[in-house]
Length: 74
Image 1 (cartoon, rainbow, N blue to C red):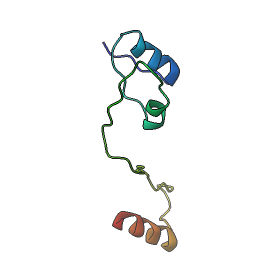
Image 2 (cartoon, rainbow, N blue to C red; image 1 turned 120 degrees about the vertical axis):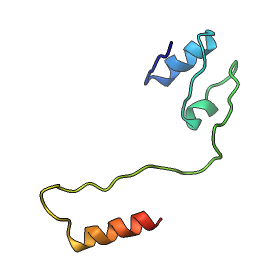
Image 3 (spheres, one colour; image 1 turned 30 degrees about the horizontal axis):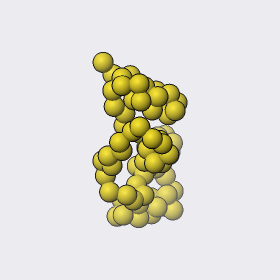
Image 4 (tube, helix red, strand yellow; image 1 turned 30 degrees about the vertical axis):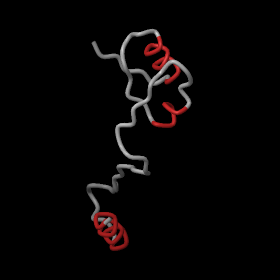
């Protein structure tokens, strides 16, 4: 069974009650308190998936295309 929840305190409460494990953001895990073992799944660092949005019926201006090029390079 899989349960999803947005209220992190409730999710961690389920884990404390022995109802399973949870994948939570690191900042939630570090404040989880006693009674839980935290196992990092990735090395610390800042990561974010981003997207560049523009109207589909209008070609993006040159500045937007250049921004897209720069973003894709990095």
